Image 1: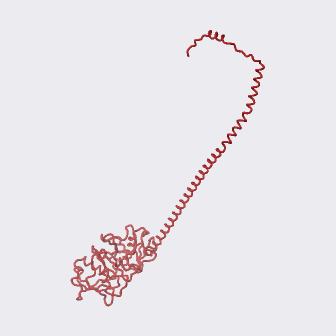
Image 2 (image 1 turned 135 degrees about the vertical axis):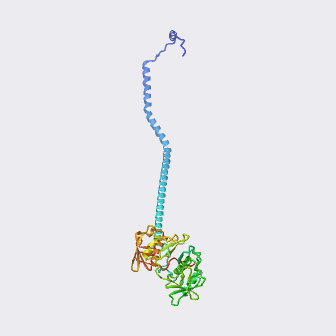
Image 3 (image 1 turned 45 degrees about the vertical axis):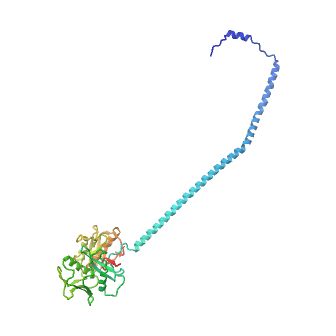
Length: 401
C-alpha cells in the first residue's frame, strides 16, 4: 500500500474542525421507547413456531398425495418384480423337476428295455444253439435219409461229407446215391471234381454189400496217391450205411488190379480203424473234421494222437493248453480233462470241433458213447455233459440247394 500523505498533526486539526455531535432527547423518553420496542419483538417471537408448524403441515398436506402415489407405484413395481421372480423361480423349478422326471423316466425305460433285451438274449441263447453241429446225429432232422461221400480236395485229401435229403425216396438207396453224386456242387464246396464214380454201383441181392464194376482202363490207378484217394473215398462213402464191404470187379467178373495195391477184390467196411480226427481247411474259411489215414493201436492211442498233427495239412482240435486222460469203461470211453474246461471261453466253432472231434475219434474205434468229465458247463449247444454223449452218425453234414 502507498504510505498515507496525512500525518498525525494534520488529522488531529481536521477532527477539531468537525461539528459537535449531541442528543438533546429526555432520558425518560428514550427508556419508554426502548421498552415498547422490546415488547413488540417478544410478541412476534412467540408466534413464529406456530406459524412454522402450520406451514409444515400445509406443505405436507399438499405433497402427501404425490408421495403416496409414488410410494404405491414403487411398491407395486417391487411386488410385480417379486411375483415375477417368484413365478420365474417356480417355472424354473418346475422345468428342472420335469427334466429330472423325464430323465428318470427315460433312464427307467432304458433300464427296462435293457433288461428285456438281456432277458430275450439269454432266452435265445438257452433255446437256440450258438453254432450248428458239424456232424449228423441221430436226433437231427433227416438223420435217416442221408448219403455220405468222400470228396477230394486239391491237396488230394479225402473229406467225408454227409448230404442230407429232406424227402425220403422209395428208390434203392444205392441208385439214389449215384443220382445225388451227379448233383453235388464240388467246385462250389471247394473240392475237385471227382464224382460220380466211373463205374456201376449196385446193391447185392442179400443187401449186405455194394458191388462196384470198373472198366479195365479206369482212372483210379497209376500212383499210390491216386489209389489211396480212391480207396479212402469209397470207404467214407459207405462205411456208415450198414453194409459189410465194397466188392470190386471188372465186367468179366475178374478182380481189378492196381499198380501199387495190386489186386483189390474188396474194401471192408464198419471195421475199427482207430483213426484220429483233425480239422482240415484249405482256404481258412471252410473247415471240416477229417480222419488222418493212420490206424492206431487203441482208442487211447488215437485220442492222445489228436494233440499231434500228422502233417501240415491238418490242425489239432485240442488247444495247446488242454490236456486230458482217456480210459475205457465197458461200452463207453471216458475223457477227463486235467483242468476244468470252460467252453464259453473258446470260439464257438473251435469248441464244437473239440467236442465232435473227440466223439468221432471214439466212433472210429467202435464206441457209441463218450463221457466227458471236468467241463464247466453241464449243458452246452445241445450236449448234456451230465451223462455219456452218443457218437455222431457221420461227419460234415450239408444240404443241396
